[in-house]
Image (cartoon, rainbow, N blue to C red):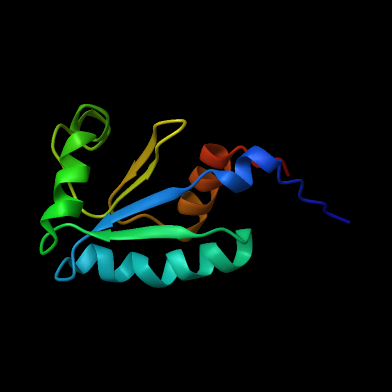
Length: 109
């Protein structure tokens, strides 16, 4: 039997998804994020950055962390865990998204 232990501090962390409504890669990732939330019992904060200046400003405030991890520029979609500063950029397979989230949130399997 596989038991997943989720430390209290991991449950308090959050993942942010910076995305854009018109971004085709973002549209591919949104159902995968829904699946991730259900499987890991987490919440991903989705922040639209092309039409919401406040969200775009927040993304730009993390430019020094996000851009180097995303090939030198800000991109959508970008996944970010602020406490660990873990970053995942672009359209990726579900398995990669899940493995990244588990590591970023400190899950133990």
